[in-house]
Length: 424
Image (cartoon, rainbow, N blue to C red; front, side):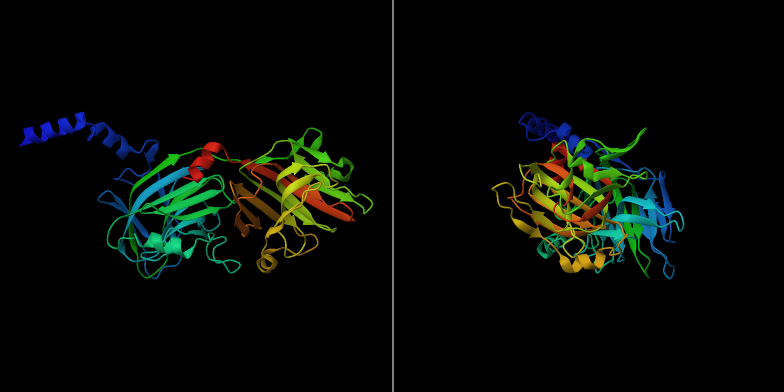
């Protein structure tokens, strides 16, 4: 019998139907490295809470400590930036859990905070993204994602109670995606953290025992911000950008760029990037000191007009239109006006004092653009008519007595290779 089986295997291999080498290659998952040896918790450490973690039968087992306060985290000690993380989990005793990524440890209370991929046994919230100990349950929102109900239902239909389930997290630049048992769940953009720690959470509760195994990661490097404002030997200046109406711009000693002119100046004062960007994230902090409005331009093109740039604006208005997307006209070319805004929500997150700093950000990839105000998503649109590339810039609106303060103007490009992974 043994000779017969070997002969069949050899025959199938010759026909191309069976290949031991290909099976081994698939099992190895090229580029992935195990971060759990299946025997010990070497490289891992427990933070916060009083849950118990141990190794059992090749698995990490986390068990909550009923009646004790605080969530617990088993933390892998090496940080990762861009990555694909894969693991299997099984719920022995129902209880809330999650997988932290790009997270950090607070020094004052040993609490882990940051992105979490939710594990809620049998619940459609599994694989959603929660911002642990930071933005979660803030400003009337629980989740960072706004995943469609139909997508959540389709994914959770694959969940296997009392059995193993697979979870996958991909983080590349501002893109975060998750899969449950191979079904896509979350597909969001966010810009708060681009590197950090993994952690296995056990939520404070009366019960809960979770198993994890086959924990492996593919390291895809780190995405980093590039600043347009740089301090040199002669003080602060802009790099890789130029000033339009340069006389209206000046730096303070602490790196704040002030734009100021009166209503006799009909041209916009602008800071315009030298390079064009197609897929990217950009952000800037500002104080709106008066005037008509201002903006963080993106995917904009230079035109022969007093306002120079035609394209999308991440709006700065000093009102509910903050972080809305406005499309600006060019010479003899009409603009498209408002492409998205959320006035009511903006008024709950906008800092309204005359000296208060706010921060806007935008992530653009392909036909999709997402804007943020003070860390919270405002507009998320997919629009085939969006410009596919262009300049980023800062605006001081012409024809008004206006003043703007800016600092920390930064950009992060998304490469073509990264976009291919984001859209897989």
